[in-house]
Image 1 (tube, one colour):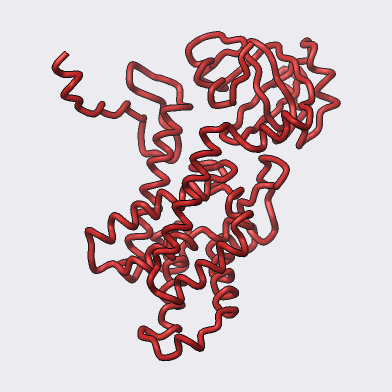
Image 2 (image 1 turned 90 degrees about the horizontal axis):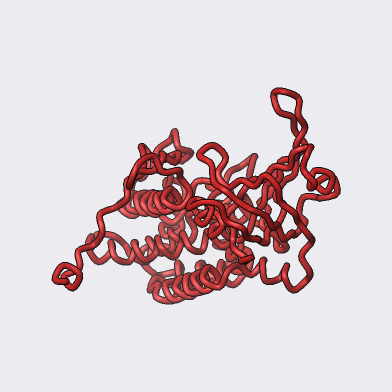
Length: 343
């Protein structure tokens, strides 16, 4: 019986019945009833990349076992799995056992491919920050990475729509920096240093709003995130770090330090693009407009990737719409390959 990640299990089950096992943490466990008052347990499981929901019915052997399970526990789940359009991965009968310490540490580390990708992304971020020529933007960016890198590397970029996984914010920020670097070469009016710093800080408030626990994959709700939101928290983070900088060596630089601070704060405040989407101000500089579109583009590309991986197929090459994409996802056109065309 193969050991699969939740993502791998989902893909395998979409092709038909599969016997497998997976390692995951209990994100939530709830006792419920059907409309006919038939009791069951609903168990939401999470690993480094994804979540899935299993149910234990009152006539199944694992029903009583679920009463002993607790949120945050680490399990190996074994069984025969299928896929349905309504509920995704399903298993009528499954068994579970607690993971040992070695298995738990391996699960928390994530699958090798994800772990390597996030390590490369974080290294790219540090190199991009090192390339910032503006001394004040470089200094505040260095201070952020020095103080918060561990928390940064386990924060999700969102709760559900995109990069909603441990380390997802690092992936999101790295991709945005790659786009920002490319666009700054095309649109030379853009201040590249400001744009790179804006990408680093635009979602820094999510280190509190979307922080994932050190010992698991749960993303708890926190009062600061609920009361203030990540934009407000991010502005406070930037101002706090800025006040700790020794600006004396740069007192005569132009633009003035206060102008640099205000423009950086504007990028955070305006990155949602419109007031109805949560920004307290609309973009009023080229860098703010560019940051908004870069952020939105990377989020949408991730949503398409998720749609191809998770949505139910409606017809050949057509997948059920995944909110908030505007319509059903269509398999993209394959890239032209001269070698294959000549065969």
